[in-house]
Length: 321
Image (cartoon, rainbow, N blue to C red; front, side, top):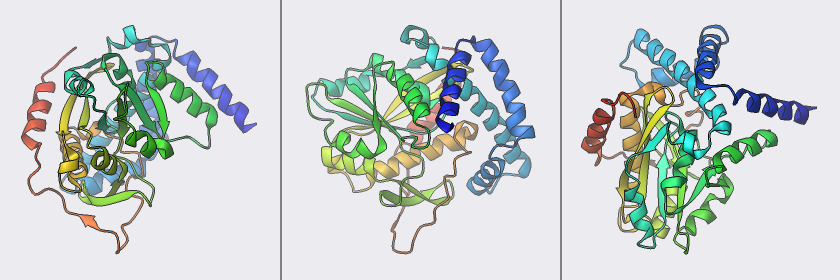
């Protein structure tokens, strides 16, 4: 019975994907009123996360960020549903990749690369990046063990543009092979969410002790593959611009936690600039660091602070693609 209900849900979601964007955004507005004002979906989690991340902000400011977050969350929900009916030629009108040449030059040097992003803006639409890449795209995802039909549906949507989905438990093996030709793979993953207890590094993030996946750092060191940050900027509803930032071209020659710390610096700076676009409803700080676990000190002077600030200021001037 449970599986039948899950399959019927997929049928319903596929039916919704036929609706045009204006109708879907109308549903988003209604959905926002329900989840924020009536149901209060994970409202305690969202407000607790915001209050801990921004202790300097007033209750009024926290409430305003939360309100904007829920509205944005509803938008990306309907946008993700629409992916089912967005072939690549249509998707190109909604998301533009600004500087893919930074990535592609490494393909011609016979080097795989690692691209890290965050659950920020519409991260699901990032799967359409394959059409501008010379590398073969491997997208790491977290399996939905309790809902196989939904997992199959989501993976199919992500793979429709040419990417290959890689379950989280297979990511280390996939990552260690990215430099093997002839394809030379690009390993893409959103590395900002809660990792399993056995595969984590601890540092401070948004005013709190926070665990991060150890995999990206370890893979970067072992393969000496260039590492990029993938920033997705919301221009307006249904329009996004992606810019790539090179974090490290030779991580194997850098300090042990350099990639992790630069990634954390970049993500935090972006969130502080426009906090409403991050995934605040995730229980990001549900674990506490054990005494025997090392707390890695953050960079005293972030290496990319000026570059990220200039990028965000430039992107915020955009009104349309």
